[in-house]
Amino acid sequence: MVLLAVGLTSAGIIAKHKNLTEFTRDDFDLLLFLLGRDARLILLPNTVSEAANLLRHHRGPERKAIMETYARLITANREYYIASTVVTARKEYYRLGIADAAILQCGAPDREILTADAGLYIAAMQLGMHATNFNHKREEFGLV
Image (cartoon, rainbow, N blue to C red):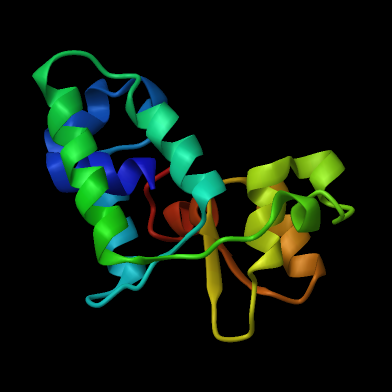
């Protein structure tokens, strides 16, 4: 979400954003390709909050533009609520934290998890979910 919101604001900001130091404009282009034309994102309050905190780690007028883009992304997609009591009952919660456990909780056969987080990816695969490790795709496309 962080790479998506910053890149949609301006791909030139990616190289300057504190939380995107390992990513490039080419990675953003790959992300758009993987998401496809009519991507429908599944948002969770946990992940929306976590991404918002990471997005705010940028100074100046660009931060306002990034947050405006992020607000539009949120508005354009559906947000699901999963009670924290449900999420903390998952065994993965202790290892991955509340946001990643919430992502796993909303997994379904018709949904795919796209992540650069190895722990989340492995957990999803172990549960038989559809998951893609963004870093594997970066390697496949020669970006790392």
